[in-house]
Length: 131
Image (cartoon, rainbow, N blue to C red; front, side):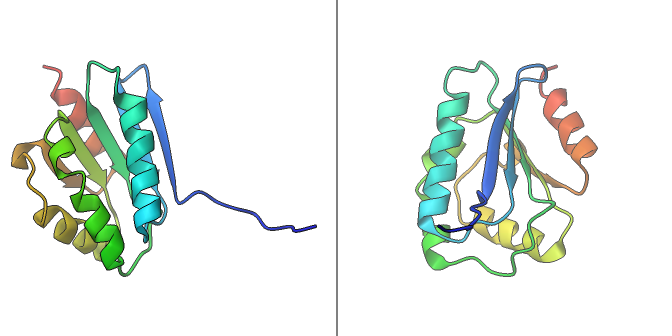
């Protein structure tokens, strides 16, 4: 019998009160993980009127990302423009640089994606879009 514990590299949940999709990413470094995360995000948000996403990377300590993972992110480029707003919470400067590099290669609405240092700042900006 194995005592192996499997931990998901991400968590996706929709907050019905704030109408915001919350995505916590602990680690993503394969195309399989990226595709699994996007499938869950799309399924969770498909019937929602607000398409705002808060991506929390505050627990992420990656120092690199595989080419297959970066390529997998690019496959969702067209879907990104259907989102109202996406806020990233990133405290780690290396993770911030990885996200900026990944986003730079994607065609997306510039005003619809911002990076913040705190959860409160990100949440406030996402809610500001309701007005």
